[in-house]
Length: 34
Length: 529
Image (cartoon, rainbow over all chains, first blue to last red; front, top):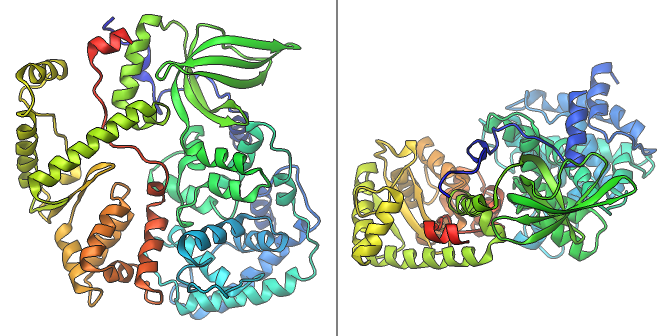
């Protein structure tokens, strides 16, 4: 197996996240957008 | 209180928690603002003011014994022998009470770099002292009549059962409290960052602040009423387990996913991850890239996650190889065997450095001399290995010459002001630019430093990559007087000043550290794993 797993090149801080299952942080983020 | 001031003050409070003393804080802050403006009229920097709300919030902390400030003083007492270094000299008899002006002096001096970073001010500056005394008088008078009941205190007293209970408090303290919010925004400015989820999570979990190196996790751990084991767990949150996790099982109850189990694909360890949600998209077989923090025997997601729905088992070895090679300092957190091996190699490299240069510190006049000398040293090191292993590594890494690739940061290019290379036995080689100025400054032992020399010393002290071991190595040879002078610290023993500066600016070195060396994973080994 030589090829890299799909998507791993795009991982990291700048790549868009799929989820935020950090309840407290998601809540703070929502409050700051409100 | 004016509408806008009230709005700012309200935005900093904890939503849903109000104490009987809270309604007075805004007015006291406003009154304090008037008194301080009057006091500051004749100051050298009258425009530099700590926002009134922060004085009021600090007083609220002291008045209600909330514990934020108490944690800072206890930490400094433990590490430096005095609760307020540079303001109160070490003395077992010293006892600080209430709104002692020395506390306010230390508060304002510590936050000063966030308010006016271009001006270095002495911790004993007379303006600071006068300001602190004026604020102390007013706060003592006004708070004497206030009930001891605060919304912040009520919020912090809520249960700590789940990881997200703790995280909510951590975020409030890190981003809203008087102790950290100025550093949070200062950090954003420094890194030209956005206050997004990743930035907030990084700040509250891993950033060490100028409060003598304390992070938000350390202050929350010292503030909350927790068993010692929980405190230790919370203090470990700077080592989030970033990795790829393959979901193994999913446990549901009453229509909710209570928790999932997942395998860390880098260290092959299973994790129990608390979810408590009816909207969990994770099913067995999926791979999630994210970070986990522990709390009371379970793990919790920290920040954001990315999903890899179709990663095959055959690809797992590549993921492991990538993490260990490209993010080794993260992988070492949960791969102790690899961390130990990296440390062993780092110590071997240190011994070779010392043998080659005749000591742990060597100085080059410029970038080209350094590059040529290091290239020669690396090549000599490689020649000790057998031809077959050299050929294999060259093939695997695509090297043209029998020596490792050497890459220097852009600021090294055409640098001709002296570069010191220090081999730290536990971390690797550290390079310090502008060493000519550093050396001339140290040799003066604080007498008549030029602006350039002071800048060079401050940069060395504030550089993230220069360890306390390197600074102590220089101070051991030349004395620490010039370091203290570069920060205008003239009223404290020089040893205390040095230790304080190291804690303040190099707090991350007092946490668990790993070598800056990545272990190149053998292709065949990686495929076998």
